[in-house]
Amino acid sequence: MSVCELDAPGPTGASLPPQSEKAPAGVLHKLRKVVRAAALSWQIVGIALLWFAALNLFAWLLLGARDKNPAFVSTAMASLDTEDVELAKRFAEESARLNGGRVRGEMMRWEPYAYWRMRESRGSFINVGEDGLRRTLPAGQADASVPRVFLFGGSVMWGTGSRDEHTIPSYLAQFLSESGLEAEVLNLGQIGYVSTQELAAFEQCCRQQNVPTVALFFHGVNDVFSSIVNGEPGLTMHEMNREREFNLLNRNTPRPAAEALLRNLPIYRVLVPSSEPAQTVGQRAQQSMQRLVSRRASDPDLISKLDSSLVLRPLDPGESSNDRLLALVIEELMVGTAEWMKTNSAIATSLGAQFGTQVVDVWQPTVFSKAAPSPFEQQIIQQEVVLCTAFRAADRYIDGLSASSSQRPSPSLATNLPRIVTLAGVFDGSEWSGKTAYTDFCHLNEPANRAIARALLPLVLEALERSPQDMVASDADHM
Image (cartoon, rainbow, N blue to C red):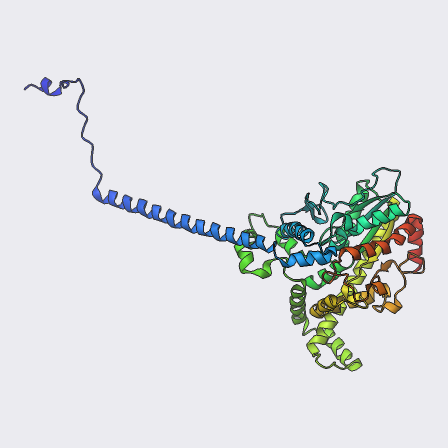
């Protein structure tokens, strides 16, 4: 056979392919091991991720189930002052769903300068508009021919535990209408606001030329509670969270972002209940004060005050020196809180004078200021020892007003009264003796909202008859 015959194509005309080289057996074996290890790792990671997702889903459902706690129905019945179980059940479900979303941050949006405001929400009983404001009924006419009354405050003014038509602003709007005065009443209360946030909201209204005829501030509770939780007056609620959030997305500070991610996982909030903002206020107040007292236990000034206090009044039976130390720390905080609020009141009044707004500043009542509490309210007072001490001290320091109902002047804007008007004795009448007005230490049931609005009515009517310049002059005379 010749060389040409060897190179000639086969019968089909195709040439034979060259024989490929085989890879070494050792390399293939190692490659197979790597592939199997990678596949196994992905399976383990995938299963772990599935379990992690399942656990968080279960925790999320568990957190959601808290919104359907049967105890909420009885609370709703007390808040609405009704025997209609079906009505209370529907209100409790809607209210708990909204509150649960608020606690988890789902119902709050960012608001410049004031930090937050409620998101839009629609329901059968609770409605929040696109502007983040709770609905007031009757709404009143929104035109320049009628006076505008803006109401600022925290959750009590916002209407926690109440239906739209039974909040303080709604009752006040009704009373103004019944008195023959048509007015536009806006509820600018926001859950958790302290007086400085209310002042910021008022300033923004004036800055945007959304100027009210009367700006009424109804507050005190959140300022006192914030002072207790933060250990110093003048800060917002959960100020430490705002500090953590400041550099949350900074690439050079990954730890805060990782911590925030962890703390917001449902499984973390189930395993660490203290991380929930909704833990009882009494626990948070007690823990905060214990930390503050521990830090200040060696403070010479505080020890000197303790010694002076023991000389003036020996310890009561069952009272320890630590109890007295705690009371002194709380007393200091309340002095600072009262001064902070008086300063904010002065700023608001001055701002109102510049924009033609009459400012009314009202110190809100709590269960601790009620002369004849009901059995339910007595139970609250006994449970909230730290808050009871704080609010009774604050009552004494707000413009020198006594915590004793017999020494409280009647609510009025007369020129011989201090800047901040107190409603601490509003439930001291015989019609409220032994009757429940509070659903907790500060929030009110709907009949109590009506009583507050009735007490605010003459203050608003009087403010509408006066000029802001007159108010500033009278306040300056009595500072």
